[in-house]
Amino acid sequence: MKLLWCDLHANIHSEQLKDIKEWYEFGKEMTDFWPIAYYPFYMRKDETGLGVEDIHCEEKRNSDWEKIREFVKENSNDDYLLFMGYEWQGAGKDGDHNVFYKNLDQRLYAPMRYEELTELLPLNEAIAIPHHLAYASGHRGKNWATHNEKYSPFAEIFSSHGSSESDITDIHMGRHVHMGPRTSGNDVMSGLKQGKICGIIASGDNHVVPAMYGHGLMACYAEEYTRDGIFEAFLNRRVYGVTGAKTKLYYTLNGNLLGSIIEPTSDNKYEGVVKVECGNAIDRIEFIRNGVAEHTYVHNGTWENEKLEGVIKFKFRMDFGWGPDLRIYPDITKKNWEGQVITEGKILSIEKLWTNPGQKIIEETEKECKFKLLTKKTTQTGKWMGASGIQTEGFIFEVEADINSTMTFVINGKTFKYTVREILEGSKLNGFVEEAVELAKERFGFSEYYRTDPFWHNAYKFKINQGFPEIAYKKEISYTFEGIKTENKDFFMVKIHQKNGEVAWSSPVWVRKK
Image (cartoon, rainbow, N blue to C red; front, side, top):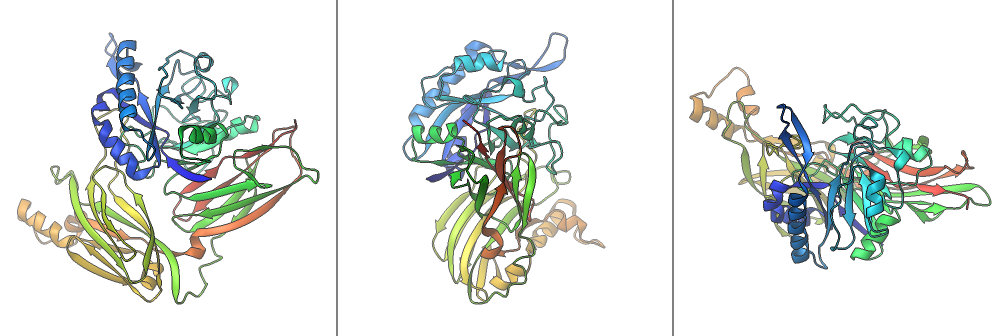
């Protein structure tokens, strides 16, 4: 099985099609394939003067659709596959869904109801994935009564909107105040508890670029890297979702991979096995049956007092950005960075935590990584649904080195050195305060104050987050569920919590009588 990553909800608007090449290049840096989700809607003024969202006329939709088809045909290849898709909303009574096609010869449909949509889609060659499910019924929240698992094999549990897992999770849905708040009944757990067969993913819905860090990603287990292979994984729900970094999650129930439907066993026992590797320390792993955490394994507290010596594997994150307050320096909106990370051991992997185009790894060897970054004060583009302002770009490095060896960081010409042990003990924050002092002096003739606010608050900074040894971020564990609790509706899944608040959800495995 190949573990493949993508953002299944990268909405590109009509006016953004001129930038599709840039989106494509960024997507290639961040994902293994890109399903384009054309957004055929726009804001207009009603004749009364009220601003309303509406769908583009059929002629414009079809013209844009053909532009996307041409782009996909020209740029999709065996190294990086592109799929065609679009957002469907209809009358808002069934919830919003993203439609994706396996092949490149399909049309864009815009009926009013979900059932009408599924009648138009080719079976096993198209999917319609619901998102922000937990908004109110009839008002673009999910309508489980019309759900068709043949066309909607999984749902988007998390995006930039927040979490649709249920109405009582700690990840809220506060981004779109006008669409919210969330409520019970339409959320993912409500559908699963009704007996629906529906896998779980996360994806961006950010309308800026595909795979923007922090807005959700999906992973799938495919037999092969082809259109057929990826769609086969989709249709069989071999998918899972993460809120942030690319957690590696392999979950089985009695040896059957996530997304499976199995029959009851003779001994009525069901062993859930989790193999997980995170980008941060694991806090806990929930073994969930029918929406309830039947067993919670707490990893927090199991490794912190272990004595570490010699050569170890560890991960740490770096963040770059911050900088001058736009209210004081409205013209300073971006910063170019040149950096180098050097180890006396070897670099095992580098994960990109990027939010904007303009980032590049220049050179990568076992001993060092050279990179250029472009940080911005905001990712807003002026659209009515732009993503939240994001200020940082970064990486997660996995390194194997002696705990007493030195890591060297050369950032914009300045050198910083820390031992591995020091990085494991806590984060290291460095601010370019001298630059901020010079800026204040140049602009305002201001260079002294009784406290550092005018300088520290306007300084560019980079942060080396606390590192964690492998025993903190990697775990294999099992739990055996006993018996069946419902009339043919039992489902079993896992949820991974990290210490930094990031979450991963597996698709369930269902136990069903024939």
